[in-house]
Amino acid sequence: MTINPTAQSPKETSHANRSKWLLRLLYLLMGAWVVIVFAFNIFQPIKVLPRVSLSPGFSFINQAGERKTSEDYRGKLTIYNFTYSHCDTACTQATAQMESLRTALIQLGAQEAKFSLVTISLDPERDTPAVLNTYMSPFLTAPQNDISWDFLTGDPTRTKYVVGGGFGLYYENVPGESGQYAIKFEPRFELVDGWGIVRSEYRGAKLDLALILRDINYLLAEIHNSQGVGRYAYEAAHLFRCYP
Image 1 (cartoon, helix red, strand yellow):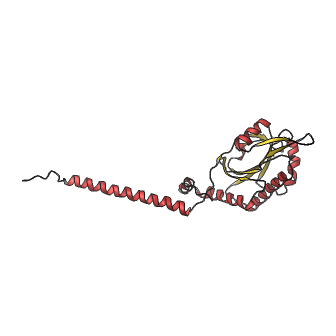
Image 2 (tube, one colour; image 1 turned 30 degrees about the vertical axis):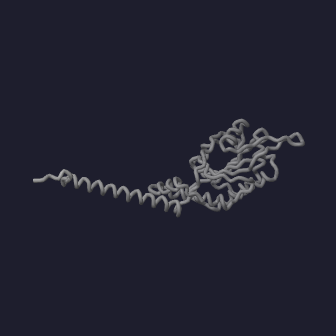
Image 3 (tube, helix red, strand yellow; image 1 turned 60 degrees about the vertical axis):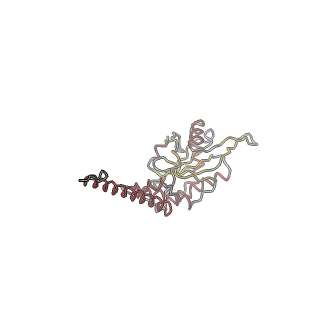
């Protein structure tokens, strides 16, 4: 009897077939994953706003003399802007646009999220709570509803840390002709989600109301739909940078 040294036993053959089957399954799964990745990148079935950075923590005083911290705005979509009461027309226009945004949010009436508006003074030495209360009064024509609007002031050094270090907004005092000073800065609006993460920045004194409302609707959709299994789809959208 001749023995073939290369012949495999039935057990070895079964093991080899199982290994080939598992290898093919692995290739199939890898191929399917590649197809899904390409499809997600090309078609982007879900749009999300990027997670830009963490917003800074702070503790300031509002126009009513109440202490407000960053924790008071957790769980809310918060829009920040920066100004001071002695600023020129450009700052007044920016504050008026915050008023228009607040009115639009009241009309939006979304139930899935709460909103807050926050204006931080860049001139805390002159902008006391009483001064800010006078400054803000003409802009609060819309009913309060559930959308609060705080004008905040505080320690100058702490303001520098929060605005300059936290939000990355550079500003400086510039001497004026009458012995007073103006503040040089680039106007900006910041959209922060309920987890305290900056989701979008809008540079310039003129706020594109349609654009920020579009972005807010993206956040509302993410809040509403990223529950249970839907959360993984939204995390995939962040992973593949499915940004509008």
